[in-house]
Every structure is written in C-alpha cells, then in structure tokens.
Image 1 (cartoon, rainbow, N blue to C red):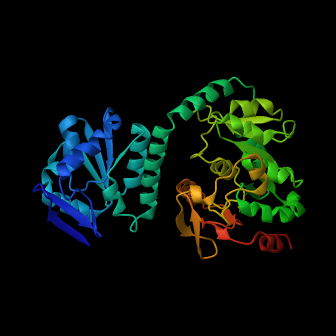
Image 2: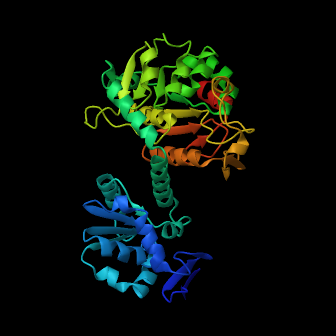
Image 3: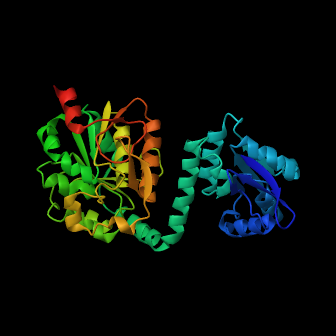
Amino acid sequence: MYELEKAKDGNYTLKYDGKYIHSRYNPIKEAEQFVNGNRDLLNKNKILVYGVGLGYHINEILKRNSLVIYVFEWNEEIIKYCKMVNKNIFKQKNVVLIDKKNKEFYKLLGELLKETKGVLIHKQSLYTIKDKNEKLYNLLNDFSIKRQLVEINRASILKYDKNYRLNKKITCNKITEFIEAVKCQDKPIIITAAGPSLDEELKYLNQYRESFIVFAVGSALRTVMENNIYPDAIFLIDGGSQIKNQFIEFENLSIPLCFSAYASNEAIKIYSGPKYIFNDSESEENLHITTDGSVAIAALDIATKCFPKEIIFLGQDLALINGKNHTKAYEKMHLDKKESQYKLIDVPGIGGNMVKTIQSYILFKNSIERIINNNRNIKFINCSRGALIRGTRNMNFKLFLEKKLK
C-alpha cells in the first residue's frame, strides 16, 4: 500500500494507495508552497501541524521559525517512513511529535487548537487515515474547510461583527434562563429543521403536539405556523438581513426567540416576543453554544443542555430529496437552489440506500454526530428521511408516535 520512490529532483516521495503524499517531481518546492500558503499560521507563539509526511514541510517551517512546532500524526506507518528519510526532524528540540500512542492525543489536540486557533493540515497525510480513523479525519477536514470558507467570506465576518455590537445593546434574557425553564417541563424535545421531509410529518406533529417540547429553527417557522403548530421556541443564528423575512406575519408572537449574538439584528428588532441571547460572552455564567454554521446545530446543543430523555429530529434531512433541500413553505419565501447548482456527494441514507448531499451538509452532519457522541445519556431519534446520522435510532415518525404514546 505504501511505496517509497525517488522524485524527479532526486529526493524521496511516498505513494499511498496509488496517490502521492508528496510531489513526484519536486517535494522541496511543494513544501515551500505549502508553507507560503499558510503564512498566517506561522505568526504565533506555538505552531500546530497535522501530518508529518516525509517531513519536508516541517523542515521548511524550521527554516522560517524557531518556535515550538507541535506535529500530530495518527498514522504510524508514515512516521516510520519519515524517520527513514528525514530522521533529523525528530532530533530537533523545538519539534514535538504526538502520535496515536499518546493517551492524551485528543486532549492535547483540542487544547492546542483552542490556543493557536489554527492548524496547518498536510492533507495528503490526513487522507491516509480516512478509513482508519474517520472521527479524526472528519474533525480536521471540517476544520480545514471552515477555514477556507472564512477566507472567502471576509465581508460576512464584518457583517456579523456589526450584528454583535448592535445585539449587545438589546435588552434580553440569557440563554441559561431559557434552559432552566425547559428543564422543568420534563418532556421529549422535537427539533424541526426545514428539510423537505418535514412537510410529510406535520399532520402527526399537529395531532400529538402537546406531548412534546417543539424547537423550530427560523427557516422552519413558517412551515409549522402555517400548520397551526406553535413551537415552544424559535432559533436564529444567520447574520443576513434577508433573515427578517422569516418573521413576516409572525412579528408579534409570544414564543421565545433564542438567538446568537451574531444573528441578524434587523430580524431580531422586528420580533416583539421574549428574547434569549447566546454566545454574547465567554463567561461561565452564560455558557457557549455550538453553532458550526447551522441553526439546527445550535438548537440541538441547547436541547442537550436541557437534559431531556429523548431528542427527536424532524426535517433534519441533510440531503436532497427529489431534488429539494427545503420545505414548500420555505421555497415560497426563498429561492431554493436547483440540484444542478450543487456539487453532489453520495452518502449513506437512513434506508440503507445512498442519497445525494452537498459538502456543507456533511459538515453539519459531522457536527451533529459529535454532539450526539458527547451526550450518550440522551436517546436521539431520527425521524427525518435523508442522510444517516450516526448515534441516532432511525424511525418513521408515525410509528414512533404509535409506540411511544399508545
């Protein structure tokens, strides 16, 4: 599976599963380009790298920086080949290698990610663990993609910062108060996302509404309200001004609105109901809520902090169903992109078949699975009809209701 061979420039390169981990022409030049493309991550007290490869990029960092370099590598085979080709790296006092034998691998990685707020990922090395350690692969691959999206959306960052400044001035309650109120109700929580399968479950949700606490993401608000389902809370994280359209005709509801401090100030201003803010502070008093770019993830994280026995997903399809990715009511207010506009990826569906999805949905799915994995005291029931979400029990919503409420 691994093949060590000479590159065109006379240096060694390594091939894994038919793919080169370093350039087959000039691995030194490739390493220079890799480091040049990550210059912003070199201006820190510590440098965090995932993937040792054959060490060419580590040598290039050492040329430019004398600070401590923490190199994480899960693949012991690659470490073995690196020691054959570039053994001097392991003698450097300012290079710390953390491998899978280290019992605190994940703890150290998490701490350094939090401290450095960035990691140089040698993607070819990361690829070699895709099948061996999917959890670590997804974590780092997601981190890399999100960083690229941040670079692309600099204008959006400025917009979110403006929202933060304006939202901090709003008189509202803390999310901890909302969580404490929900804890007292001792009911299962249903999270309604705006995936197309939600349309198929509304009549059942309406019939058994009072048996559950219902959390509605903002994009699903119109769908549930038009079917006479009043949720117990609405959730909002999007910073775009167009998000205020979600509240047209619903400005005067008395339903709690739970919103990120970075969410659209225009939307929050027009809503007159009770408001609960989160992520306005890093203090312990007002705990941090995971969003990872999805309002459904924020709703899920808040739901887990209410300690229900069960959390049920509706409309959390994370895939295209019949070419659609949102409910009918959502499509009335927003232009839904057609299937042909996406780069589609096949992922396992809940029925055992493969379903079409997009990269952003995979990021959201991975984040949801991490939250589920960290809350094993809660049962998670997926009554959606799209992508498989690991850690959940897949059930038809009607059958779930019949079994639970018979």
